[in-house]
Amino acid sequence: MFLEPHFKGQRSGWIEVVCGSMFSGKTEELIRRLKRAQIANQVVEIYKPKIDTRYDEVKVVSHDSNFIHSTPVSKSRDILPVGEDVNVIGIDEAQFFDNELPEVCQELALRGVRIIISGLDMDYQGKPFGPMPTLLSVAEYITKLHAICAHCGNLATHSYRLIPDESSVMLGEKESYEARCRTCYAMGNILDFRKKESKVVGHQQKLDL
Ligand SMILES: [Zn+2]
Image (cartoon, rainbow, N blue to C red; front, side):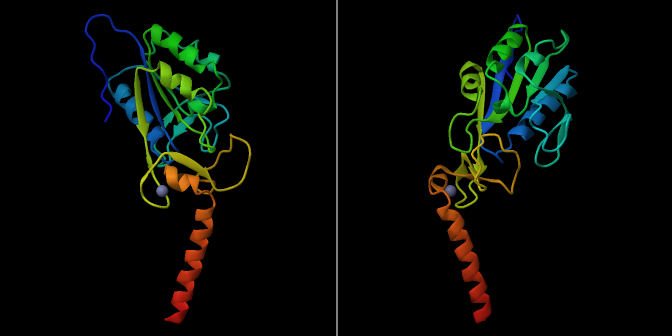
């Protein structure tokens, strides 16, 4: 469990990154941290890329429909004019932002703002996603969350795309992706066929009875 650092003397900003695969609970963790800050009467602002409108235009919504209001922005620089009174900035789906996001976050952290970033560390091809590798390098605190592998139950680090599509931005949830461990991810669609076979076997067994 992430605990906020304590400061002595001069307060300064910092950067936290919550990363992991799909279905690892990144957005839930972002919302948890932001809500705690709100309860402590801190001024909180949340941003998300305009591209991510899966659920709602102005809310950051986790898969379990826990939500918090946010501002959709089309580029990282749009976050900079944030008010002087803001203590905490949350950024969801950071992987979809442009490569200026790390610079913007560092500028805000220097102004004394606590930045909490949530994003996919790898795309569906298992490659570092957008500005995430740089954000991980410059962050003070990193939390890597894991999902559960849909096939073997081990910790999942990869987001496997079930529907063939070459673009790295393909929104959609359970029907398009599943969380897999490294080994099951490497097995690719062999596992899809096995799943279908086992369903057929199950059906035949039923008929035999
Ligand atoms: Zn697995």
